[in-house]
Each structure stands twice: as structure tokens, then as C-alpha cells.
Image 1: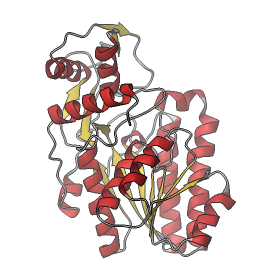
Image 2: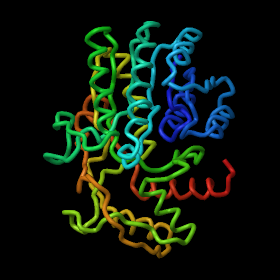
Image 3: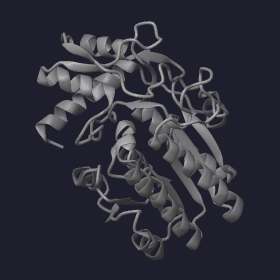
Amino acid sequence: MILITGGAGYIGSNCALELIKNNENIIIFDNLSTGHIETIETLKKINPNLIFIKGDLKNLKEIEDVFKIHKIECVLHFASLSVVQESAKIPEDYYQNNVIGSTNLLNAMVKYNVLKIIFSSSAAIFGQPKYLPIDENHPKNPINPYGKNKLEIENILDDFDKKYNLKSIKLRYFNVIGANRENLLGEWHDKETHLVPNIIKSAINQKPFEIYGNDYNTKDGTCIRDYIDINDLIEAHKLAYLYLNKENKSDEFNLGIKQGISVKEIFKTVEKILNQKIDYKISQKRQNEPSILISDSSKTNKLLNWKAKTPLSDSIKSAYQWELKLQKKSI
């Protein structure tokens, strides 16, 4: 049985869906602070045997009870607060939820002899890039509490490997976009901060889109990022799970497509796909935003035999169809 923490969220739920399709028995543990019960209901329609437990990793007893009652073989850990700008405003919440919550999870795993975990990490651990594209060995110097959280958890995982033989795969995401191909699950945040869904929301609601800064050291003055489709990302998780079971060793992998696309280029692509002109305004740039972040996923390609396949246009189309569904409240 596989335990998914944060399985009511965007990436966790998509991973749960893929595992259900592969006939895996899963338990979702989520406090629903950012996830949605409707997402769980969608998954339960596909597999009524799905077990959902509402609980909080900050409460050690609640997570220990899961391992006490159920025979868990592996954990996929997605539960995390993840808004970079918010992490600077309320760092105490981020350390409590992300670092202490993760430590509670690992302590419970060790107590009940569950020694395999796949961890949802982030490119935010790298900070301002020293070179591009960013490989797994790039210096790690996070510039916000969120990135510091993720790096601290990675370090704790290394320590737990040395002391308890707990094996981990750390998957470092760059920018994830899109919805699953059946339009069952997609990006759903009560306060959306990500680029593609916010451009689409602006188009649907006919409101100007806000571009944060146009004087970065890039070709058009806007930030350049590496965008990976959610379906390709989930395929990497499936392969990482197989790799962990086969090799039984800790490792880390960057997940991106080794291609940088600017905010303005994304914006123009959305306009083209929607066949709609979208108004925008330039606002003050966010603090400590790197101009360019691009992943070198060569190691992932080689060791996991993984390669991103989804064109940007398909990712945006799926995100648009999902947003239409979301706004109709027909999930």
C-alpha cells in the first residue's frame, strides 16, 4: 500500500490518479488546507476503495496512527505550503508545516519500518543560478523560506538514510503546468499565484493580466522559466517509484524540459491558443526572483529513462479546458 501525503492537491492528486490506474492500493493523507475534498471525491469515483484520511503532519499522533493501522510500503510526500512570496511573509508557518511536518512523517516511517519515500522538492533550492542549465550538482543557496524548507528536508532525508537506511528519491520540480489528459484533475488553488492559470483567468474574466517586472536581464525583459507538463511530471514519479524499488538507493533528479520560455512568450502563446487578445499591465517585480531558471534533466533522462513529451500548446489547452470546468463548478 502506498501513502500519498498532500494527495488532495494539484500534483499529489494527479499522482494518485496515475497510481489508481495502475491498480495500486493507496491512502491519501491531507489536512485540506490547500487541497479540496471535491478532488478526493473525483478520485473515489474512479476507485471507491481509495482510503482518505483527513489529518495534519504537524500532529505526530495523527500520522503515526496511519502507519499503525495500515501496512504502508512506500510514501509519496507532496504535503507542503508552496507559495514563494507567502513564505517570506509567514516563514514560521512554512517551517512548522513543511519542515516539522516532514520530520514527523519520517519519524513515523522509521518507527513502523517504512523505509522508502519519494519527496516532492523544488528548483527553489538552487537560488540564483551560477550556471545554466541547472543540473543536480548545482550549488544550493535558496533565497526564500520555501526553498530553504525544501533544502532542509532534503538534508534531513540524507541524515535519515545514513542513520536509519531510509531511502529517498528527491524530485526537484521546475514550473509545472496543465491538467491531466482526461480533464479530471488540474491546478486548483483558492488563491492562484501561478502564471498560466492566471493568464487564462484574465482571459475568461476579461481582466488585465499582471506581469511582475519587465526589466530582467532576458531577451524581452520578463522572467524565463522551464515549464513541464503535469502528465510528464507524473510519469517521472511513476518511473522514480520503479527505480526506488529496483535500486533501493537514495538519489535526486531535476524535472524540467531544458528549455526556457519567457513570461511574455507564454502570454502570447495563450493569446494565440485562445484566439483572444488579453490586456496586461506591468507591475513591480517580485523580490529575489532569478531572471532565468532552466533545468538540465540529463540525469533523469538517463537513469529513469524519462523524457518530457507534451508540447507547450497542449499543456495550455488542457489548462484552459480545466479552468472552464473549474469556473462552472462542475468538478
